[in-house]
Amino acid sequence: MSTVSVSAPVSQRKKVTTLTFRQKKEHGEPISMLTAYDYPTALAMDMAGVDSILVGDSLGMVVLGYENTLPVTMEEMLHHCRAVARGAKSALRIGDMPFMSYQVSVEQAVRNAGRFLQEGGMEAVKLEGGRERVDAVRAIVAAGIPVMGHLGLTPQSVNQLGGFRTQGKSASAAKRLLEDALLLEEAGCFSIVLEAVPARLAEFISQKISIPSIGIGAGLACDGQVLVTHDLLGLFERFTPKFVKKYADFHGEMKRAFGEYLSEVQARQFPGVEHSVETTDEEWQAFLRVASS
Ligand code: KIV
Image (cartoon, rainbow, N blue to C red):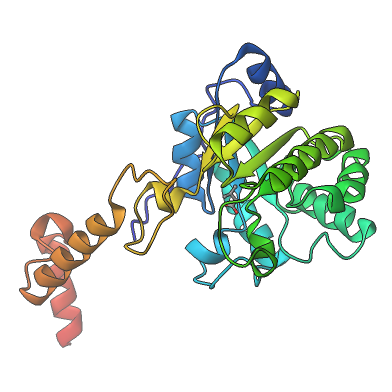
């Protein structure tokens, strides 16, 4: 690990807010969103000009190694939110409310949403679900906290959905999804994630709601797109869903770099002279004299 300190990021572009989201939809400009869980990734994303950074509870699966997102706690989320907030200044920062942090009562939902802003450095929260979350959404929004909804494949309900599968395929399920989207809009959400739903349904919903839809596995016609960054970077060899496009092979690159390091250490080739520090001959001779006296 280098000991060189990283200076604070200089924000060069205009701050992205929930208003920017609305304006982008009005002007037909696509909204870009990615997940991040740490400082350097958030810094790089912010510098690349990504509109919004979601500290997703996918944290549990891609960083912490859990089976699914259910074990993720508020404390784990807040820890990673703070790291992201130090790196991302221009992008809109959204914290994902973990399982059981908003389902028990409306009061609990408002308190925990508030923690994302007060303790996590976030500017908005996301939560999963439709009609059953309307009261919580309304109360959080009333507290001055912007809320992003999440419909379709909602990973926190994986046990109820019977696995990570496409949603809204039947006519009745599609109708329910549309109704939920309209209810979330009415409750005050500033945007809604549509995950793993048929592309033409996502297009239909996007046209019916006035707030931006952000798609993941929901086709091109959504108002914006989001991906889990570890999937985009190819950080895993494991299965990734059909809707993921790998823009890089970081897993392969990590294996190559670790293997090269290993063989150079074993062959005593690393560190080379250029990676070592030296004292002056004068100081060294002085040291040898005192060391042997
Ligand atoms: O947790 C997450 O990363 C998400 C995105 C997939 C939208 O909810």
